[in-house]
Amino acid sequence: MTSRNDINEALTVVLVDNDHRLAALTTEFLTRYGVGVNVARDGKEGLDMTLQLMPDVVLINAVVPGFEGTDLCMTFRRRSDVPIILLTPHESESSRMTSLESGADECIATPFSARELLAHVQAQVRRSGVSTGPERRQIQCGNLQLDLSGRRVTWEDRDIKLTPYEFDLLKVMAERANRPIGRERLIDLVKGSAEEAFDRSIDFHISRLRQKLGDDARHPRLLRTVRGVGYMIAAEG
Image (cartoon, rainbow, N blue to C red; front, side, top):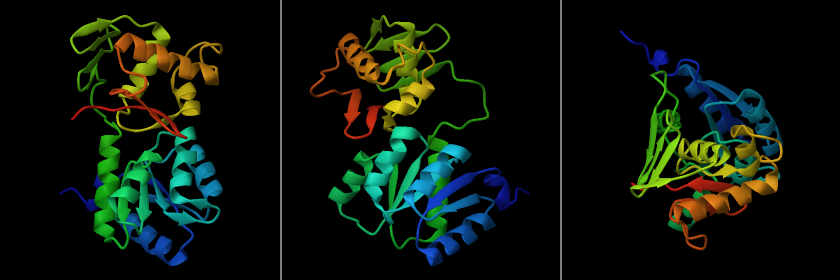
């Protein structure tokens, strides 16, 4: 019979929370279910810990010393594409949308049950594409399809001719569809020449991709700009 710990074997999270009592309770529960928890008391410590440990999920209290939760999400997104769950006392649609636009993958209103938190952490890990199965040969994002073995791109039934760097840039974004990725993180993920990977050239390559895809730069349907963070592919459906 599978034990409850087997489900979360080797799963790790970084918890950014200066509420010692809540952090202790959250840590106790997740640890009981086999999740490794690393607690950071402020935003800087949390970011340093995330870049060093590369956890599966980051949990951020909406208010931590020196940062609002949304500001901290934006800071994390510029450096990492790790799934972020924002723990917030606000339940309004506008505050939730602000959190998601800042780079959070999900918001959980406090107070929440421990089992609910565990379920959300597990769901984010599944959505992040972690898989022990065979490597994917295709990526489908709505009307966008990438053939990884043939390095071909189809958008709305049209073959799109891309440079190798453009293909790799589109690929890493498609693998993380609906998740904003910061420019620095894109540079890390896309392997190319130093000249191609220069920070400001990311904007140039995104512009070229939009032109080739016929995606309106002012109102893009696919390649969207997330203000203060970077870019993301908006996967239909």
